[in-house]
Length: 303
Length: 296
Image (cartoon, rainbow over all chains, first blue to last red; front, side):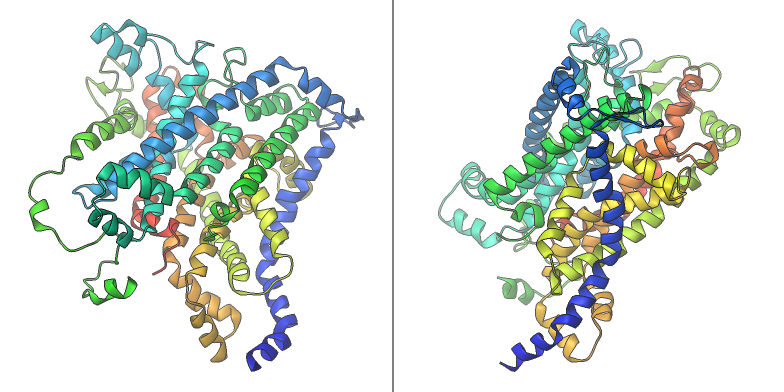
């Protein structure tokens, strides 16, 4: 009872303290997150070169975008990217996590090897893989020549049919360790008595993994799914360094297309429209995931 | 369960979920999983070995390489050259001047926000969470034009401080989510006891919650180091002076020059990577616990 009165009495002061704790974040957010979003939507209604006063065109940029074949390419590429990075990264990452959750000699070294690509700059990763895929000096082509596997001697990044998939391979190499780390963290939260009980009940390894461990990692799967979708939509640096979205827009992603429109073609209004649509897609995907699965996987809460 | 584990005499190692009774008979033979892990590790390492190998190409006549990776006559000439011919030290310092402050600020502001959300009663919690999530999914490319204009208006265009502020703002959501989970794992009784002793909210946050959340802070530190150290979109559009450019801009800015000196290019890539890999190795042991919200 007395507890309750004390809390009531201190409520305004607590609000004040809380606000002070939140203040730096709120200020930074207002300036560098909220305002730019509003600014971007506003700019998307203009025909604007970014320097001279813009001309209001209403939804003109949006109608232009929906008729733009390159926009369609970016959507298709994002779709491939989402599908072909999230699933392999999750499966390989989970597999590695299962093996590296055991006590094993060299465990820390293995973990480091698989995670290091994720800490590297996309500039580094991009240039290194350009070299690997180089049809003359690259490791892949040299291997192809040495073994007679001619299909390896091919400029995968320069071929419009394969460029996006070559970039996806690089992305999987880069980020699989990140998925592994998330699964290792998820495995920490599984009560070992559950696994002991399964063993006593005579469940084999495969069955334990499939019916107990995999379902218990639901939050981890969902976090990785959301991060994967958002990360795929956001992909800029790696593609910019590897192919610049080329050849002839074949590996264009929404952010690389935005960048080209804004900083190479000085079409800032149109670039803002692409950004706005990208942001809407990202928000809608996240909201539908929160709707379908609750927000626990996002905030780290139990439910 | 927890009591069980605590009953085992502490050996200094943190209790882990999978540490059961010791099974000595397992220790002798190499585990079968090495047969799977070792080839995968080699595959994963190959690009890294290659970048180091090619950085050792001789400067004058690159000559031939074995497997496209190992120069016939390795030399450290490229490292000497990039260190003496380019103002590379300047670029390295610039990268540090951006990364270190943004890591410190994101840990400070992120943990303050996390503390308020986890332990204090603040208005509009749901709105704050919504804004955090929005920032988490926000693509840098969507705000780069606006950011460019804001920095200009604030007089922070062509200025490293501008980058620090933007990286801090964009790094906050991840920091808050990770640190808050860890703060929630601190028993509430600890908070109440400290408050009854007359401690201020700030000192409880500073002296109790922060030290207990070191694994989470390590995760945030490595994540923020990565994003600040590795980014190049923002420097590309907001920095004009060559003397202000961070390391990541150098390979692209001098791409033409490097065509004739592939070894120097790869040496710079190694230079860009070493600091961040070292930071990762330093905090590595905290990462898994930090991500799972464990406290110490």
